[in-house]
Length: 195
Image 1 (tube, rainbow, N blue to C red):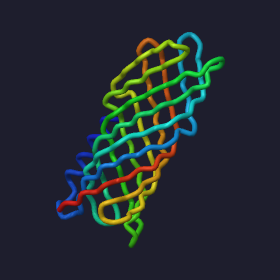
Image 2 (cartoon, one colour):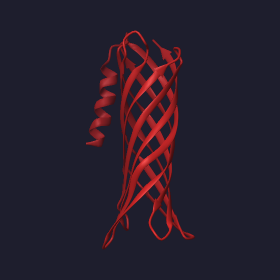
Image 3 (cartoon, helix red, strand yellow):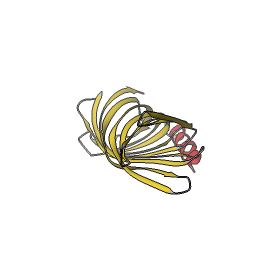
């Protein structure tokens, strides 16, 4: 399913008429994960709440008429979390990158837009630290990302964005481990228009 979404989005972009508006956008974003959990299941299931910070970057090609656009590109997401495991805390660092797609629905006569984006990872890494012990894991296509937000246009080049970000990572090597987070991020988009 993940591969189908990526192929469908790229094919859709390639079929859009060249007369439509085209842009390359880069984005830097960061924010707070206000809720989430660290799940681990070996013989017994462990489920710990977590919170922390997330930050990232993306670059995409977008194309469409003035009132909507479709885009595809690459994203990177880094996260630092603390899970309350009692008696001690567990520090989690996660890094993921991969392809994503975005749909922007414009608000007429403003240049502002509602945004939806989704992505899958090509590669993931995470590190667990607790009481001096460190565990490292990695994976391929283990993370899914969904975001919904709003972008305010300041001029033709810059947009400020705010979005809800849901990220779920699954690692199965040696232990069934899932890291899920819900967060809010602010970002700055820089657009380079062509066509």
